[in-house]
Image (cartoon, one colour):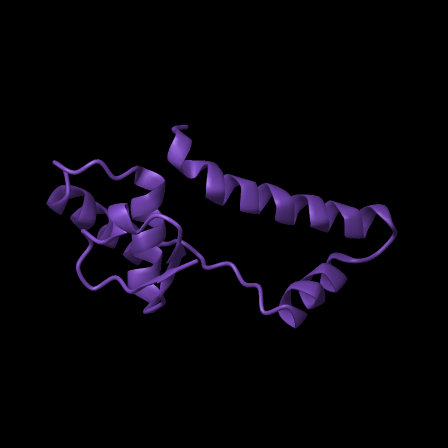
Length: 103
């Protein structure tokens, strides 16, 4: 995997470790779900529609340097009509219709 996927992978790894922590102290995974909900943390499913949006973006931007994981994140945001929170506006500003929040 290339460098660009580290943010997504780190987030998933951290969530997995927190879930493990719940199990390790004798709690149920339902408690982990409630923990995420109480903090308004949710994960979007990536499905066929996301893949189609990704394919079109990748085709349209094939001369640009945008990593696949970045395109996948953008595709998911476009599909779900959500803003993308990023530190890297440079890559994402080339994607029409994508709203961003810089943090």
